[in-house]
Image (cartoon, rainbow, N blue to C red; front, side, top):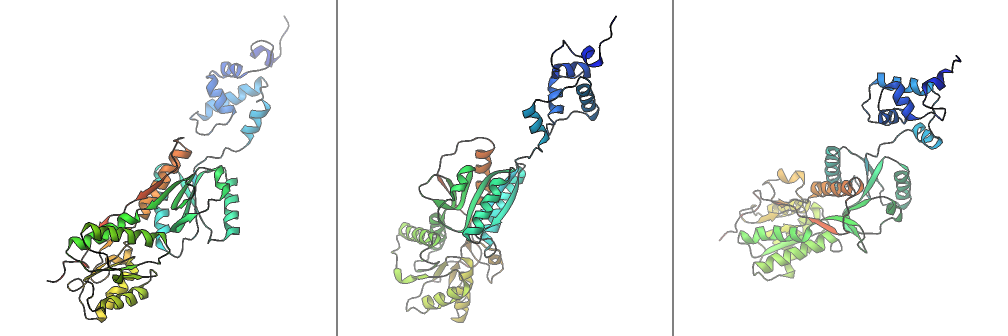
Length: 356
């Protein structure tokens, strides 16, 4: 009786070795064979079983098809990272807080975040985009700006799922997340009118900025709702810094009929107004109510602590991460639109009813 060689005696038929042959020899399922030979990550097959499969494959001379062999030889890169690209991050706490919101939500869902600040440098932005597009672990991009504004979307981002954060593009072809500034200006002013203030000064931000335009719009709407006529003489343009708050505060408090409350476009200018009030010999809130905006950390530590309105950077970051993951990972179709996130009112002790 002629003896056959080892390979032919262990394989079914005389054709090319198959995974079915390996499964029979190793005593495992064909799917287990496929997972082992294709080196699929995440499979929970014991080292002993993996060894059996490899020995059986070697015994009958099995080779992966050329395409799969190439894929198997290539390290598997898990797509697990969101790229956060922002024009500036070190000159304001707001983008940092947004990054916190993105990072926390992403990590809960099993994703990481890589942050890139471009400093509004076109060459640096192009270098960042090239790096992001080459990175196989990136699932998508959150493209952000330090202050709310219209942007021209880099065309390179058309290759990746992208969500705009604190900015928007025209025509509206992308999902954008921005703060609800009109609602914020309304809520801050409505708090003061609810206390009985009728002469309310408003120190706004720089008038060309979206945030300043929308907060003034909300301020006017709240006055109209309270049946209070808008008085242009009670409005001053600011620059978001304490010195301008102090200067504009002195101007308003030196009027023949000064305001009983002053709303500021941010907390820093409100601190300047408090200094102006002290210089004028006015007690806050007994003789002047002062209202901030943004709820920066320092608002808790002024004397008295500052009533303000939260700029919802953290929640905006969370929402951006949620939508991006839905788009990139879960295949959810999200209509291109702008989501406006409102911030809550924080009432502390710098605001009170006006003196009779």
